[in-house]
Image (cartoon, rainbow, N blue to C red; front, side):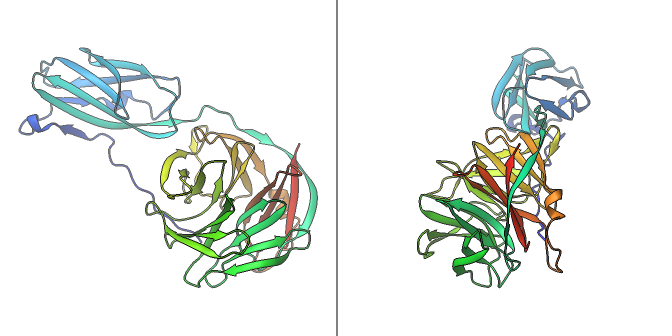
Length: 346
């Protein structure tokens, strides 16, 4: 049901000439065939520069994300991939020729070298869950379960007795909003919407809406969680954004990789013991992510849970992760599931 657009990079293979050389054809180019499609941290990167006209030059410098990594009079430059976040990195080459500079630009993809572990779990308890709740966000706070639900005309913010599945407090969104992820930070509830570029901040006790905010860029709202200082937001891609909870502006971001593969459609998020747990939309898995670099360190397969629910015409996919720090257990459910499962890692 969710659709999204990715910003497409078009830098690969493009060559730029400085303003001093704008009337001259470029003599130098990056030999793309000598570059690997992907690199891991610690790999040796060899950048070969073609000099098609054997033009004289003073020196060549190579920059990774605007930081100089090599400089010499050679046409081949080698450096070690530093400890940087995963995803596409900008590689720039500058050829110095007297007062002139010839610029070239390409990109390198940095991927994870962490082998994810397949984790196992036990079901501790099974509780009822409302089949009217299209679960988008789920979170425990002081032993109470809070839930954010979606669908136009049906989206709500709920306080729930998880033992009975009954709602004890609720607030309904305007029908123009499709509710998404929630998180509780500093006694405020933060709630996203899907395509409306809008989020809300509520008083935790009364559910009174205190603030409406716009997203920091044009993205969709999917999942939301927090550590002890920042919020973390997913947008349906492989990217998780770290946000200032006061300004709701981006502080930094990570791109999530399982070895050499981007993990896209990251949905509901939960911060558990220093890691980010994330549902992968339309799949029965939850990935456990290192928030520092985006590496998937663990994978949980919850296909077994889907066999234990009652399938109704509008029963939808797995979505909903809530950690109860008191019991050190995790609650898992799905969109309009009739059950919620309390699980513990083995």
